[in-house]
Image: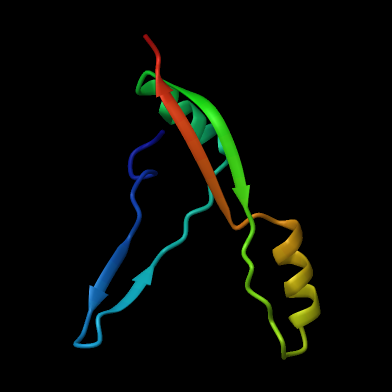
Length: 82
């Protein structure tokens, strides 16, 4: 992975401790190759969709369909290669 690709910009600020973050989408090969570079092997993968339901708005139907079809989170389990 190139310089800065692994960085996730996030900050907690003001009295209400509001969270802001930056989402960075990368190809799966970046994650798998990054683990391999560290001597790890992917043991299992789990795609996790969101269960959020939009009930109003002009795009709620499309957003609900996208939430079912496109996983929001990816879980990777990796093991150290002996």
